[in-house]
Length: 209
Figure 1 (cartoon, rainbow, N blue to C red):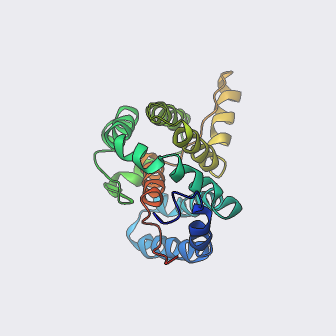
Figure 2 (cartoon, rainbow, N blue to C red; figure 1 turned 90 degrees about the vertical axis):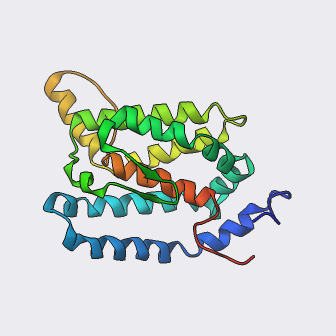
């Protein structure tokens, strides 16, 4: 990775990463299937959403063989995220309160016991927009705006594969109000943030280039 960073040839590295995306998807699928026996009915219903998020994230990261993530790294994305780790966690806590108590930025959220309590309500849909705004605002304080812009795009990609747009639309029709947000539960969003951080920290899949 460091070999190609000075020359801006990180796309060479991520071409190798992205060639393994099907293996990554299989790992996530196997994990969710294994965990299913330990989950309640509501959480089992959310398995499909977890896979949709995985597919969306891989599509985003591997667009044009990793151009976006290569840009993220060359713009100091990993350093930006590392410097804003506490602020990102604060954003989650301010938005979701006690639902997010601890986060492991190695890639796994802690506190799965509260995951199944989340529903796709209009309030929670609005909450995820608040989280997005807070996280992006913090990342915009880094020297280069690119990491913030890419994280904003990641949130938007995730939103497209969740049912929350329908929930909010139905709520708006019933109440005469308008809102644009999407949600997969606090811990799902935090897990995705953690995954992005893992990619940014070069811990996605070891490759030799």
